[in-house]
Length: 244
Image (cartoon, rainbow, N blue to C red; front, side, top):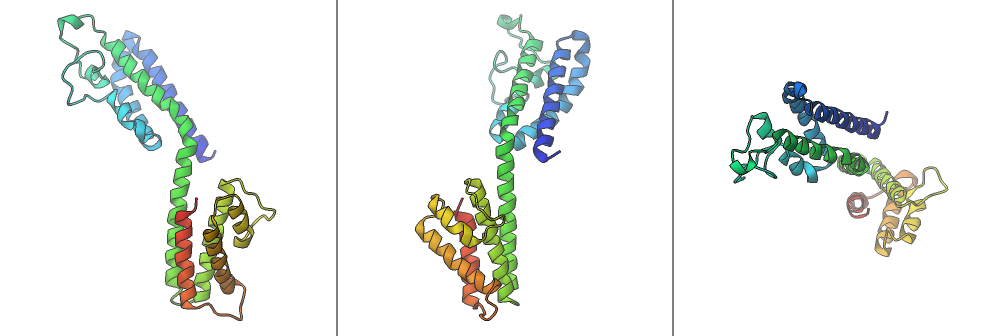
């Protein structure tokens, strides 16, 4: 089971648990279990919402937590925490206020938010992948900086791999296919430019970086200079942070 299936299954499990909880809550003799089971469900669900849909996080909490700024207790302000504390409106106009019904409505609203998270999984995982890739690229470029102190050629070869992997990722994300199973920098430069991913100056920069990389990886009779490796590292750093 991959990570997407795992997350989707977790959401489904929490949704089913919450749905059963609400149904049981509507039966009075099941009420005592609600105090314990809801707290456990809420704690797990809150974390999932925070990770997958932070823009809905405050709303999800608002159905449970008492707003410290509220000025009255009634429809629209009654929350789950009120019920758990045994609080109910004391106003004469609200003498028929159904605390169980309002609590059920609040939990149901939380359930609908939780259920909607299935549509967020792909975008969240894409962001995580991008962040991880960026961290890996930064680490590799820093390694190249250190490696340049002992071997310019090895440092240049490593940076070349970073650039090549980045271009392959760009091509994949823009639906650009190559006949080669493992296309090189030169194989991808023109297609990325032709599809509008690169402008002409970027294409020229990539061509220059590829030339330095080739000196490091293929031209054994020519040694790269410190200036070339510095330009290669700086160029790669610019490329991975400015082309998407």
